[in-house]
Image (tube, rainbow, N blue to C red; front, side):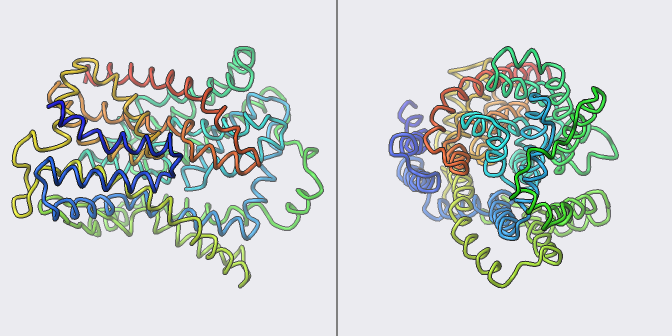
Amino acid sequence: MILSIILTLLPIIFIVVLMTWKKAAADVSGTAGWILAVLIALLFFNTSLEVGMRASLAGIIASFPVSLMVLTSILQITFMEATGAIKRIVVFVKTLAPADKAVQIMLINVGAGTLLVSIGATPTSILPPIMLALGYSTFVAIALPALGFDALCTFALLGAPLVAFADLTGASLIESAQVFARFLPILSTLVCFGMLWIVGRFKLMKEGFVPCLIAGVTNGGMAVVMAYMPFLKNGVVLTGVAAGFMTILAMLLYLKLLGRPIIDRSILSAEDLAVEKNMRLVTALSPWLILIAVLFFINYFPPLKELLFTSLAMPVAIIPGQKILTRMTWNAYTWVLISTILAAIWLRPTAAQVGSILGKWLKRAPRPTFSAAIFFAIAFVMNNSGMQAGVWQPVGDETNMIWVLSHASTLAFGGAYPFISGYLGLFGGFVSGSEASTIAMFAKYHIITSKILHVNALMVTAATAIGGGLASVISPAKLQNAAATIDALGVESEVIKTAIVLSMVITFFAGVLAMLFALVM
């Protein structure tokens, strides 16, 4: 048993070593881990080569809500950069809430950060230059954008991790959203206070207590509203959009009630004013406005949702008996691509810009897209280990890598397992750089272990997913990306030292909530 546990964990350990010691990129580390996982499954867990290859392909296809969303969202953000739309949006955001630092932090990093990440943009690329222009240190400008959206990371990329959670656990989208919603008002508020602690320690936490509490409860509370309100719950994949927007609105109303200025244009430079004059804000926002409008219509017009989500589910069975519902006409990546094309009517890219966009996209997109997919492939190889082609069932429980881990976990952690699950997610998110990949890696493992321990598997898996989201603030790839946008490479290592404490503290509370929910329900 001990040898089986070591062999099962070896691919993950190998990935961690490559990323931390060799500083290898996620796609390179993931590929090496996948090769090792396949070899171990073949040589030690009685798995046929055909099963290993089929499982890998099934994992890649199952990753489409995430990997293809990464692919298309990078295209959209590259398009918006090339046409000047991002510059125009940045100019507007810079003017918000100059008189209240706590409100400004909540507006930009929680409100705008959640909204941006939910529609496929990258806060760690867009927000650091804004924070630096507003007078914050490079340390703060890197740390806050990486932390602000973490509580609602499940609803990033128009709910891609939520879709992965639902598909891999067998729960409906609405049921999955309701599971996560129970955690989020508390965790989102903790994230808000964590940001104030980074900027001004306990002094700023005390000064900004009220706006911080309002922002956290609004941000997390909208997840509850979207998941449980009968007329809203069909659009749970848009929770991040609603939460980000309502957080911004709550902060603006707070400033209005206190009589403080909401917009200050004096901060704008001559270059900013030229950008503002050259393009209307609504034109700059057109790709996102079209996307959000289309997705609201699809999800809140029942006949269309029934057609795209159910009738056109486009199931694929790479492994006999295991259907993957691709839903390619419903999933957000299709509509990101369409909204980008439609927005060209207003943003009017030149032929030279189109060439530049495609060139940059082909340079930027393949590696993160592949990285998102390869960790799903690893998870599916582990999930299906022990099978032989033609049989399509593990020969025995002990030949399945996930069963081995589950059995070991019940012996090691017992009743404390739901608490530990959050830290497993934090570890998985650090390794894979993605909440969705973390869900793929641990979902079956948690379902088996929870069944043995008689606890709620959805709550346990959700705690792991939340831990994976909180890992964004300690993800080397995300922090390096943020540092690169403000020419501060090297500072990200200092951010990790501070952020790891915060992420572990917030994960502790996620674990406590998981214990409560998993045992009570």
